[in-house]
Length: 160
Length: 160
Image (cartoon, rainbow over all chains, first blue to last red; front, side, top):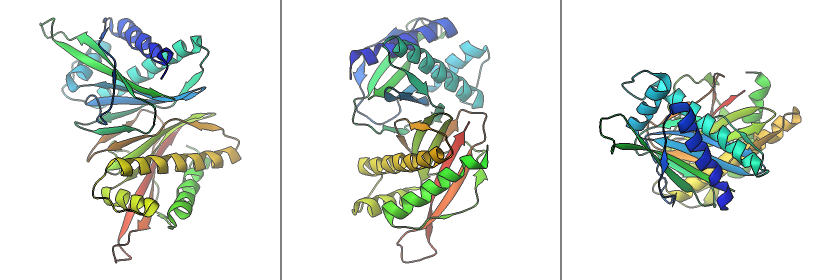
């Protein structure tokens, strides 16, 4: 997979974190994802179709998803309820939209499908493709009082 | 949601069952899906984009998925392994493709994203949409020696 298909997702994830949550997310080392389990407990999946075809999955652990919800909406939540699911669906929509804008700059036009949000521990999530799946980890601080205490948002995608 | 968006999925599911598996699948009563759990243990998800936007989820219980695999490939399988996942991904692809052909007859052009297959018991699967989600159950016989013993393939979709 061409590097030019990776950058739009990096820019999109970091821009959305900065503008919507007011948080700088630091990217860790991208890896080739070879296991078929969801990277987190809550995963927003979005299909992208157009000049190219792909799928992006935005995945957070429970604590990270709750923190994103709290930061976005301003309310605490006890569990991964419908409101949190909707918030992760919205983040998936917005990161995909931002990535599509970046792809447009390279002359690649894409449309987004409807997001779907999957919740569960140890859910098996299989990208049905022969193309490599890239996993980008973004580290962000949660306000636990310990600045070293970070959560991760995974942006996993495959792009034909 | 207009009835004309439902028929393509009915025709597609029954045609694919008949031509690929040599089985007649009888449709049960369509329902409005209001719960957010996956209908089965193995679920192929496909985004559709174009003149309209939607998502379709093809869901089978473990026994149904194994039977579809056996009928398609001619081999028994012990568990929901990678081959079964690929087979359900393929069925999802083909049913979506057939539905798209039916939509075309109504002047609605759609492209398909990349399928994703989710495996797990009690997985929560949330369509992020305000549009109703329709669930079509298709009953088919499994060769258990009892002709009354049927499995179900659910075709769940939402279409804006």
